[in-house]
Image 1: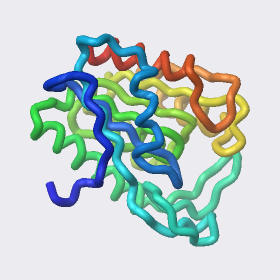
Image 2: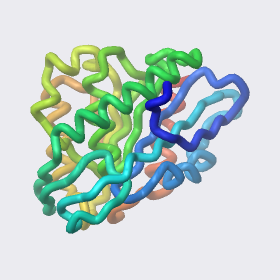
Image 3: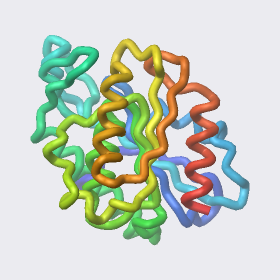
Image 4: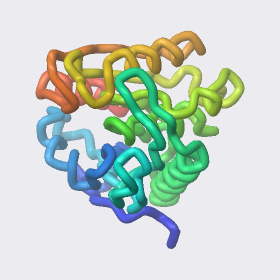
Length: 223
């Protein structure tokens, strides 16, 4: 697929039978989370292809139009709200669907794929993961929020109503306030999604216990 986003790929073994597509945060790139793969503690016999795509470059309104890698434009933000470009969200959702289809074409079915994301990437993981027409193996949403609740309803998440979702947040996060994280996981839970929620005494980042918990989630849902 010529329109695929460029990606960093890491395979934990020969002939991977499963994949994790992991979306970075605003201003970062696909290299950002690649170093955590060894820290996940996955068993040697679980061959997983990790796909870390680079978001496109675009001007970000709330950052005075500064151009950076982003999954969508943010018009305004504060600790309790975000005003996202909805069309940009939809475009990134389609980009994620293309990445999933690419893994399907390489022999990995959707039910063997986990979609993960941090911060703005987590917002797309929430939206693309829950609204994907086929059931995923799992969804991981870290230090994030829902950019467009109107895109997520009982009708749009029908295919992933029973997909396990891991959500985690730093209790001292000054960038994406924990209130936003709680609001997102509560919204998903009210729709009937099986959400596992955990907080950590950190800011806008991840920590080793969190990474190990994610590793356990990956192993449980891909083993």
